[in-house]
Image (cartoon, rainbow, N blue to C red):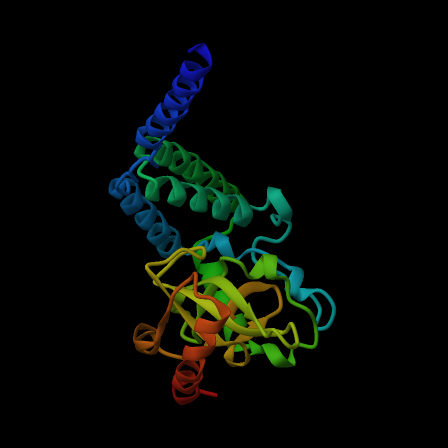
Length: 267
């Protein structure tokens, strides 16, 4: 009898365990929190404040100016740092961090980072004013260089993707059209094919995105900005792309994109 009972008991335990395992609740991912809209609004206001002030701190950088032609002397003179010490790098990093926190719904953390972002900006503005630099000097310097911009295909030297990331895109009238979010490479040659612009955005973060063929851009020595000779209306009406679009999907819309810019970019 014992030999008959034991298998039955064991079988029952195994079956019971299997049923319990099937009925055990599976852990679920926490529901995403809604975006922290107040901090997102404050970030937008901060970007508009920087643009209105005219100091244009996100445009600092000299790496494009090395070689031929010689480096251009900016109004702020020796007040130029590189790498992690550069105001442009610090502002871009803090702005991106605050944006991520806001989109994750963390209002308090976003506001904390935004406060530090404001401190970095205010400190740099104080340094410039102490050195006798006013926004008008920066604006006139930038506008002069925009008019001297040369096609990127004729620069004859390498450009740093690190410098390009988050940089402004402006037209010859010095209107900000957006900022650089990403670059698309030709899979066959490895060369830059298109630039993804954050439309209406600041430091590479915008409300939506468009792609522009690389050959239509201009650049200048001593100025971290790409120049596109179009009006704001052309930017607003440009075909939109998704930032997470894969290569196959991009190739499908590429003919439409290329045709649009061929019709609208002025020489």
